[in-house]
Structures are given as C-alpha cells and as structure tokens.
Length: 133
Image (tube, rainbow, N blue to C red):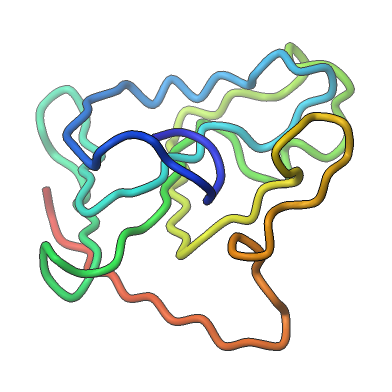
C-alpha cells in the first residue's frame, strides 16, 4: 500500500512496481512513493542484480515502509515545481519503521488519530536484513 501508516482496508500481498521515482504533481515537491506493509522487497537492475530487504524476524515479523525514488530528500529542498526536481541515475532506498501522516480523517486540518501518532518520547524498534537479490 502507498502512503503513511494508518487505517488500512487491504490485505498484505504481493505487488511489483518500477521505481520510476516521479515526483507527484501536488503543487510544491514533497516526499512521495512511500509503500507500507512490506515484508520483503527487492531492488534490481534489468539483469536481476540488486539488493533485497526483509523485515525481521522472519515472514511473520513486523512490517516495514519503503521508498525508492530517484532523488534524495535534500533534492526536494528548493524546487517549487515537480519538473525542477533533479532525477538522479541511482535509486535511493529508504527503509522506515513507520512514517506518520500529516492529517486525520479529512482534508480540513484534523490531526492524525491517536493510535497512528508517533510520539517523540517513546522508543521504537525495527529490524531488517539486507542481502543480495
């Protein structure tokens, strides 16, 4: 699933996608392409060489969130329009435990629901294994 951590209506399953890394046309450039509920993912070139990331411990362990854009977060500082963001040749893998969304149940300024907040005064742990794909 794409987006931030929050209520889900879909099952965890398999999906394939290209990491084209386009910047969403949402006005000002911002981080996009976060994929939630990931157990295992592989980033490979056309020849199949690459990197595999797997949530630990095992297949029944916690899920991760991933992004794989062709720009760095720093590349988003400055450009005012998506077409101004420099597309890099390499893919930048981001592995997260959770990413808190910016809003709640509406688009009119409601905060995220309490159960989906990430609090700065708490310890969060996640583990993952990197291996050749």
